Structure formats: structure tokens, C-alpha cells
Length: 176
Image (cartoon, rainbow, N blue to C red; front, side, top):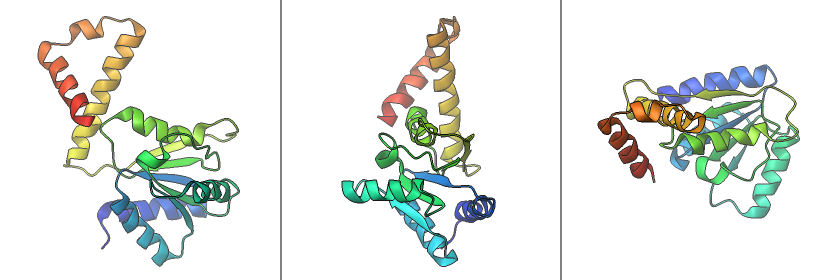
């Protein structure tokens, strides 16, 4: 069963592959990755796959195969691929769904920005209109604004109202 999002992804993947690019593809749901894998298999498109159940030795082999250019796509569950991987073979990153904590997505995207990356990296975030995914993106923006304000020492944090602060804290605790 193909969703609109998987159809859009397949179109993007086809365009990237045709242009000689390689991409990391992240989802927090292994079930979503399974649907994408089925679509890629039907289309005859090669890929590497990594989730939390992937044994360490197989994980290293998959990373090496991808970085050496043997496959154009690397499908990775967000939590399994968020840290500790050097995937500079990619010049594109596709997030199939947003995670509540934008830092988790940023860590995943950073897999393509490691030492040794010689090309610019482009990031796609596939968001379904009219869904909770839009609310998650608004939450990302709020968290980023607040974090930037606190890190820059501006008075943005002091301008937030009590309700805004409580909403941000509630959203942050719900994500944990």
C-alpha cells in the first residue's frame, strides 16, 4: 500500500539517484521504513538498512558499503542512526517524519556532515499537511527560538508569557 508520502519519497529518490546523488533516509518508525523498503524493492533500487536490531558487524558493513558508493540510499531508524555513524557518502538527507525533539533529527542529519564530507548536504523533511506533523514543526520552531534566545543572551526568554513557557515545558516532557 503506497501513501502519498511514499509516492513523494519515491519521486525524490528517483530524481536524486538519476542525478548521481546519495541519501540517508530517516524515520522513527521501522514500520514506515518497511513500507519504503517494499517500494524500493519493487522499483529495483538498492539500499542499505539499519535499525536497532542490526548486529554491530552488519552495521559496520552497511556503513562501509554505503560510503563506498555501492548503494544510493541508506534507510535508518532515527534512534539507531542518530549517533556514532560517519556517513559522508551522502549528500542528501530525507526525514520521512518529524521527531518531537529537533535535536534528535539534527544529530541524525549530522551523520552526513562528518569530517571528510566534501559536498554540500541538502536536507528534506517530508511533512503531511493537516496532521500532527505540522504541530511538531511548530514545536520545533518554538524550541529553537527559545534555545537561540537563551544561548545568545537576548531577552526573548523574558518576553515569553507564562502560558508559552508552560506549553514548551509540557511539550518537552511529553517528548521524553
